Length: 275
View 1 (tube, rainbow, N blue to C red):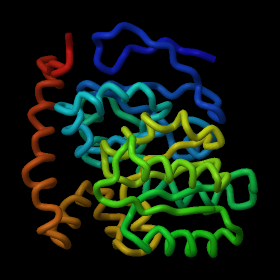
View 2 (view 1 turned 180 degrees about the horizontal axis):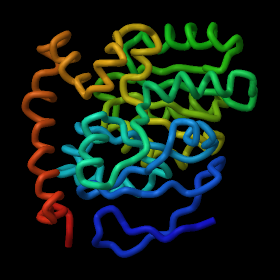
View 3 (view 1 turned 120 degrees about the vertical axis):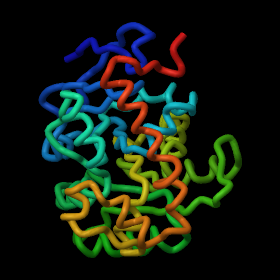
């Protein structure tokens, strides 16, 4: 089943889109600035067995206004969820609402619970600080009751493509036999790594760039109460808890999205990468 959908940039014509394996229908694609999100529920997303997903939040939208490499790989993702309560509310105001917010940190525990008794599903974790992914592995495997997490790797901060360390990581992933790969290297970096390297991992069917999810699973970082997230104040909760680490992102960078969205609402937004 194939649909024809507009390129998110609106300047490269139409591109064919296949329904991701496991989904009954192709999700409705909703434009936002120079990219898009898919109108998909958590239950439907959990049925996706193959492909690459991304979870769009405000930090990523801002980066997508100036990072050409990041923007150029956006069409390589089969499903993009709305991973921001602010973005969820903004899309409603723009009359392009999606059915729900689907965050990576909510999705992953539901994923491993959903496939707990399916031995064909195994996962390799890439990212987080040394020791954190191993704790997440132990905790998840204990919850599931089998070794669903079959390997972990915490790359160095200066880890890059095209290096012996990158080659060794890919060899380790392939040797593990994992069918799913969770990559947590930070927004933008993790998506670009997947786009550049997925062809080298033929056994991996599902690619999941899910940011801080490993930290949450290891209980290294506390999640905010649900009501804080539901009213769109998760950013404020994080800022109060970690002001030195978070202030630049939440006070300087992310507010830049507001004038972009206002221009979008009035039909004045222009894609910075349009030809």
